Image 1 (cartoon, helix red, strand yellow):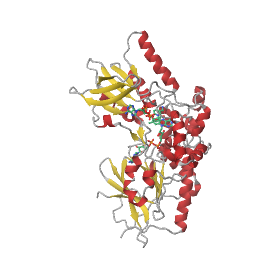
Image 2: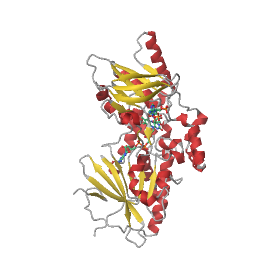
Image 3: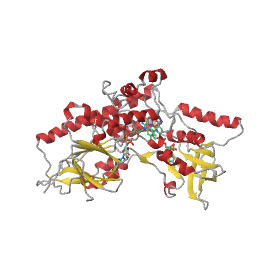
Amino acid sequence: MHRDTVFDLIGIGFGPSNLALAVRLAEEAGVSDLAHCFIERQPEFGWHRGMLLDDCRMQISFLKDLVTMRDPKSRFTFINYLFERGRLADFVNLKNFYPTRVEFHDYLSWVAAAFDERVNYGQTVIGIEAVKGEGKAQDIEALRVFSRDAEGREWERSTRALSVGIGGGPQVPPAFAALGTHNIVHSSQYLTSIDRVVGPSNGARKRVAVIGAGQSAAEVFVDLTRRFPHVDASLVIRSSALKPADDSPFVNEIFSPAFTDIVYAQPRDGRRSLIERFRDTNYAVVDRPLIEQIYEMLYLQNVSADPRHRLLANTGIETAVRTAGGQIELTLRDRLNGHARAESFDALVLATGYRRDTHLDLLDSLTPHLGEALAQGDVERDYRLVTPASFKPRIYLQGCCEDSHGLSDTLLSVLALRSDEIVASLARHTSQDRSASRTPTFPCTTRRFTAACATDVSQ
Ligand SMILES: Cc1cc2nc3c(=O)[nH]c(=O)nc-3n(C[C@H](O)[C@H](O)[C@H](O)COP(=O)(O)OP(=O)(O)OC[C@H]3O[C@@H](n4cnc5c(N)ncnc54)[C@H](O)[C@@H]3O)c2cc1C
Ligand SMILES: NC(=O)c1ccc[n+]([C@@H]2O[C@H](COP(=O)([O-])OP(=O)(O)OC[C@H]3O[C@@H](n4cnc5c(N)ncnc54)[C@H](OP(=O)(O)O)[C@@H]3O)[C@@H](O)[C@H]2O)c1
């Protein structure tokens, strides 16, 4: 029987969360021998490419990059990136803490390039399996991670710990889910799909509705009005007005790493109430300058008596159906006077936000071993899923711990420190494993493929 090597850590997803972790692992001398790799479904590094609109800015200071809050002397700071790109002096002249997302994407890609050998790009993780030891206790000793590449080949790797950093999934309201994707796109795929979704003019004007009142909706709305001279855009919002994100300094302290301790120390209800109280820092809110830009655009088209674009406030969507001609007919109800009316659109952009529960599907097969912990989101302060004593592998969750760790969990704010906390935990537990000589005792009979510890199970 062939016994395979086992990784100390596999990171699923290689967005900013696991990228920050890769940096921390590389910079912490005490963990240099941890065998680890990452699996990312995109063919190369990409940070919300579908929303990489030209002039949109970061919603966070560049000083909250992947490392500075932990170690401003790291070579992976945004400032060092600017220096190496030869733009430091020019950036200083901008007098702006908020780079464009295009520039921040370039910074993240620059960091990611340093870890190319650690990342298996172009592979989607499709399942996780618990591996029992052969000892009497039959404890779960490790996890098998299954992934599939673009050619349909399946890969299998074994690990003692997982870091799940798969981000959010598109939140598609049920009214739209049944309509397919013919002329409907979620904002996360805006740039990659909008030309197809809107289609050519062919001499006719196109009516496009953007659904949502958050930052994505506002950015998409403005972009549509600029990108397509033949589009009449309607921004459909349930609320009475586009509301500004509260980024005032005292409120902004909730995104400081120290606030994570405050949230985590609360009982469940207290955590929820803190999150609700500060919801308008992040969800269904828009940067003030963008609100002012939209207001002015709508005002100016009234001055020129050419009102092509609209903001439909207080407007709920009751039904969405496809017409015989392929348009989408929405039943819109005015939430103030209760009146309903039908309007048809050639295309829809759903800027309806993100789900943060996609890790549940990925880890579903472990439920029999984990009990209620997964569904209830029982996570330790060090982001480790609570597991029974018989379940030895560690599962670190990043970006899906908002309920326990607060609003910064889905954002970039705490990445530098969170990666530090996870690596400290990983180092502690790995050294315990080693001092207990917990070597793997599970069988692995499949043939090894190219990557160390990876197996192509399709052969
Ligand atoms: C348009 C937009 C702009 C934003 N701007 C900001 C901002 O300015 N400031 C801020 O603090 N936050 C911002 N956010 C919030 C955002 O969540 C964080 O910036 C950041 O992306 C979180 O990083 P992450 O690695 O946790 O998730 P993601 O960036 O979503 O990365 C997850 C990665 O996992 C991969 N993946 C998913 N499933 C699998 C799988 N099964 N197998 C393999 N790989 C998988 C994905 O391809 C992706 O690369 C923004 C969000 C959006 C949508
Ligand atoms: N520049 C940037 O850095 C940038 C750009 C884009 C996004 N982001 C970030 O990405 C995250 C998500 O932002 P987001 O704008 O994508 O999502 P969001 O803030 O969660 O907003 C989703 C919007 O969709 C609306 N909605 C949901 N279901 C609906 C339905 N059935 N009918 C009508 N409306 C519905 C919500 O309406 P209600 O308000 O009525 O609930 C809400 O306004 C945030 O952290 C944001 O800061 C950042």
